[in-house]
Length: 252
Image (cartoon, rainbow, N blue to C red; front, side, top):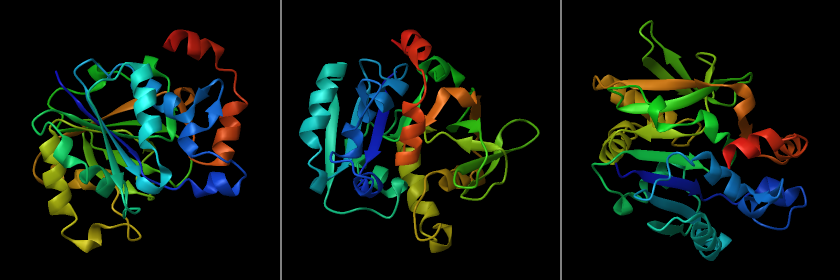
């Protein structure tokens, strides 16, 4: 089945530049691979030959040539690069701005360039039957995540940003059974400014719109040691300190 994959990478990476890095975050090398390649490796089981992959970039970063070169190396053929003139008010908006490239009736997967997940644990068959949305999670301490609360039947009953309503934190991947359902949910949910979080439009909370319409949202509970968040210099340093030899052998 065709799949829309949207990779949002439209930030400035200012924390890395402030820490002394001299290339865009996605080009930083770690364990012999760029952070871009680590992120894409996470999606190994989703990036089938018929996947349409859309990258949402910031024009000032001049990302297009690098993205296309790496996509060629990774064997991705149906690729679009959207370059935004300015930073948006959140990941949901960055993804929404690429909607003209989507196959509207096919599933949509939105991911970032900040996380590596061992692809052994991240597979399409984890999506629960009858799911209109799917949010793979891991159980991790802290308040700075997107959280999913489950009902007794295992379906999501609420999602929140930066508010710990459960132990299930999103890994940063968001799936919708149809791309046009994301588009419609975005327009309905964010028509109310009260649904912004600190002025930003996040993806996790807009699943509330699907739930309010009687649609089902599921999760997968992934092992903590399979998730490597790479969004800050400190997180990258922790990643660099790991021995990933066994994971790499299994993933390739």
